[in-house]
Image (tube, rainbow, N blue to C red; front, side):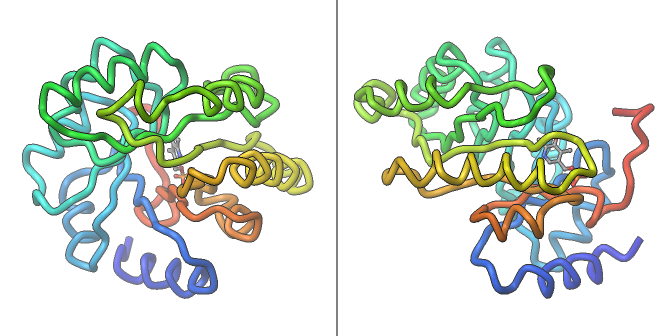
Length: 218
Ligand SMILES: *Cc1c(COP(=O)(O)O)cnc(C)c1O
């Protein structure tokens, strides 16, 4: 696994689209993250609180950590001191807790509202009407310690690219309807070229950088 050449290949393939690459390092050992960091990668994504906290304690402080997995309210306190962005805000109660814990550390935590765009019922997130209703409120004043930066979505796990494209485009149109938002997080190893073509400006890529995960460990 040559992390440096994987990153370079990814960079070459995506250079036409302004975006941030979040390297998804879940289940991967620190040595691989250090290799990516040495190659210039600064943003890393994890989906489990315990693993995220452990890695943040031992790896370079310059790393920007992204929480991309479902987050339980009672665990927000562990990541509030350092997390750079939470992609997976899927309820107002979670947002309230992030705001509360961020305040304790005198921080403003970047948050993305996760939107349910996939056909699977198992994927978390708000539906479109809930997003529109929330963004019509005075959320900037109501949540002074969070920065609602944008939206995140995961497409259906399918080989039907028309379906994936439809889902990405629908999220893009929701994003476009709200001018205060700046970040649209969509696209993973299997679908990031399509996501970027559909207007994503943040992609979350794991296996294309670090190799396939061993799911018995994750
Ligand atoms: C694991 C994960 C990714 C990355 O998946 P790959 O297929 O390895 O690129 C992206 N987003 C979320 C929310 C994930 O949990």
